Length: 173
Image (cartoon, rainbow, N blue to C red; front, side):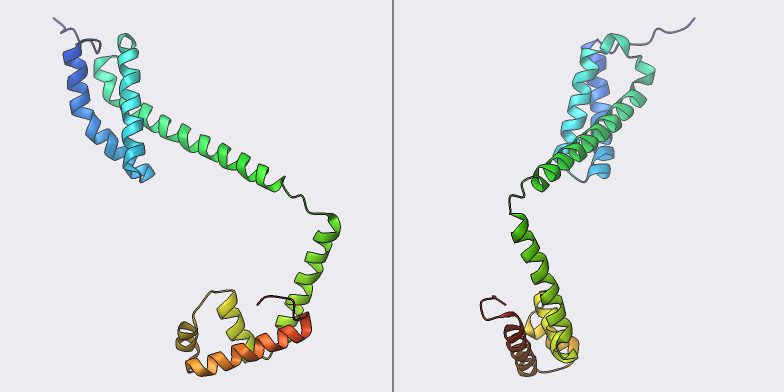
């Protein structure tokens, strides 16, 4: 004679499922998302859903239901975040209120700046780019190039002087 499966709707059976699968399911989702609070929220929401839908869940398949529901909830959150980020980016891109003349001037200045940087002596250009583009300190640049900090300061000073002469004193370097 076949034994009747316990009902997930019974509080004792539900609590048994919770104690048995809450921790492993939380770890499973944590490994996917790297955020313990998010993992706990997802698993708790799945167990709330199980309680609400208890009469439709077969006890012997509860484990696979829990893991599938947790995974699907995680994937839904990821998809939602992507949509939110996409809309934030689109909103940010649409808030460009500069005049076309200003945008043209900015593009022209960028071209002049690139040309002025490429016209620098190789040694000064290297120091300038490491400092301003790579955000390296003079000490780090000295370690990279094998020069003294004073030599780096001289090269940077010379590079800035040349750029000011070519681009105008009103720029801030």
